[in-house]
Length: 220
Image: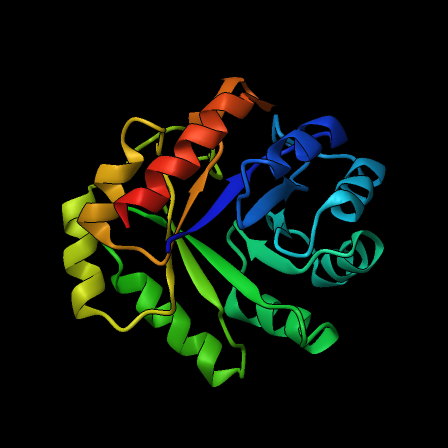
């Protein structure tokens, strides 16, 4: 069954409402320039409210490893997603601080395809950094996710079939209407959604979330 992450949850009431839909994870965005930025106290309260079956993933963009580690400890985050331009050395520094925390590396696929990602992952491996999953997002200059831009799914599937990658999480423009087709086309390990289940930036619609999860899981 495909793993589902609902990203950009901002408040405790929404987190509690989403529990009934049973996502595998919620994403808490700590990027200061994001419309989905979550406050530290709110993040800690949300993590504390989640059942064990739902993990909290911290999403960071170009933050210093020590700052990321501090937030992980304060909030009780179970996984970290690096979604910026962080070099492998930065991931290695974080891994030294908290080696038990799994890492997701987000990758904004551009016209070059996934070739640069394989080179990046080789560097991570050489530094002893285990990547638990890669999140494939659409590339838009100056933006770090949540844009609604869609990846070319058929091309991505062909690349994933020819390149050895960690488990793939598909993101980028997914909605309740298209996620089933995306899952059948790409066959990812997981899917990630933010804007596709919102009525406004950062405002999740619980009914849309439930439909998204149902469509993703029945398509797998």
